[in-house]
Length: 212
Length: 369
Image 1 (spheres, rainbow over the protein chains, first blue to last red):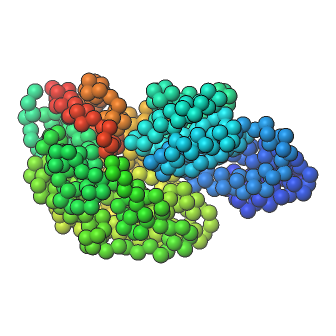
Image 2 (tube, rainbow over the protein chains, first blue to last red):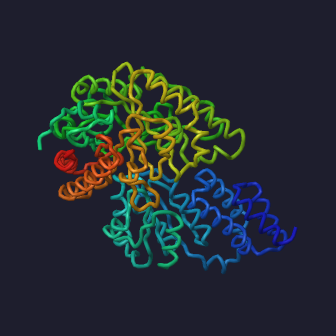
Image 3 (tube, each protein chain N blue to C red):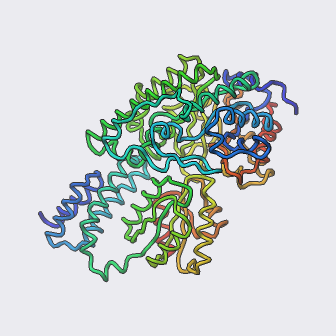
């Protein structure tokens, strides 16, 4: 199979949410001598961008997006270990999580997928995450971006606690903070000292890229 | 201006599209009213574990705020908890599932309808507690039970992300999702019948996943809209003598299905001004949805935490003006209830005076002059 056929296969496997196919095309890419970064850029990212556009246009919905994301991660597991260390080091590290007291992580996971597709090294600290864990992960990974979400109003205060903790630990100035989730807004981001608010994953990626 | 109708007269007029003295109002203040019990309030654990305490919050809320409705929302983890998922109970935070029950595809088929007559279940507390506040308030306001729809209860039991993937991952996972939905629909049927014995005027479904941010028409029809799920449940509510009502606080609700097709007596919804396409009160009325149902909404719930009462009054006034203008332009009666788009946050930081400000402002600015 030639290079274009493999990259098209990767892209289509992502768009159609076929994880097994995505994994197989990722293996084919390596066997055919395609650089892993090329396979990611011209296959996976291209596919995920199409998925993002279709989701934004409401022509596909969460089930299809989540299956596409699963397929992308399956292929990434094959490709990432083969990326040269110097190339991997150029990727921007970020920490993402749902703040303490909230376990709603479906939105966070979609945002994580889109940031991964956009070339970020995403360190996912999970859900119901205390402020100190955001701090620890940011330090450990030398993060340039922290992304936080919450779906519930009562746990919005945990976002402020996290921003405060980053300030207290002296690392706030080294990174940007973006927040999201149904009850949040730019006004709230300003109020708690975060840099940005995004209403969806695509806007989040665009704003973060612009800010970094 | 003093009210000219009592709460029930006003609600009945609104429900039957007749003129009202003023717009109806019901900020969705449920869990937050536990703070009124015993003067100092009680914890969530206490509130959701004892039918008398559950009912007392609605009674105290009515005495304090003078609402037009009483709707028995507890939280959205009642059914998942009774099915076997682990529910975390913080002292002052809404209980939520922190460890789903269903861990794999086989788990869907192992679900069993719990014994809702067992006093240890929260389903029992919910039904009995609803009965108690219906008895106490039923002659004063329109009362309604509140129940999670099958897909919502399933996503709480398995985790939404897994359910959405399992819907279309492969044939066996899709079949398993349907098997679980059938079990939960049976559970819902038992709950509907149990509620009906308590004689609330209505029953409100939470059909949260009917949202274009989550599911398209095809997906929603297959996994909730179908007659074997929501369709037969809506019918059962009416057959059992209750008004069928729906709450959906999602950003892009399936209004054509949930209002125009299902024709609920009341439809409660939110508004997300930042999200393109999220329908405002004006758009909802202009597009004919208030022709079909009494619509409730759409004040930002976080305003009850963050705003000062003056701002709440201003926002409520603006919404009253918007709604009155549009209802009159369309030749409708009192087909809108000034409410929060979703539950008033039950946190300690919610300002009770904002609930009062919303009710008072509706009485002042919602007058049908």
